[in-house]
Image (tube, rainbow, N blue to C red; front, side, top):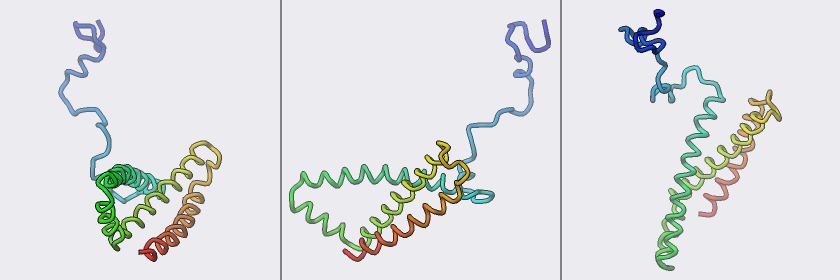
Length: 149
């Protein structure tokens, strides 16, 4: 019988039975490590913001479906909601929604182009091009949204 097997015949049993530090990596980074900005590249920031905007868009989808259910309550309930929805605070939230849509969509195009190998060496150029295009569209949309209120 070798060193690595005990009487039960399981390889590595003696190492597992020995006292000492736990030799495993764990389930991932600590919860606060995900928000630690030190040593992060732009790609890491884009990845983190892409996740946050994705969660925000899913939240908005359910919120939007809930708001549409006000149509079942009748015309007066819908008109009351429209009065609230055209306030400056809600129009600001619409601009935030536009930012989430633009960032998530443009970053998704960047990830798709780099990931499929269409432009594997142009990740930074695509990021900055998406940032410029997104900023132009966001400013135009914000002026239009706030100006209509």
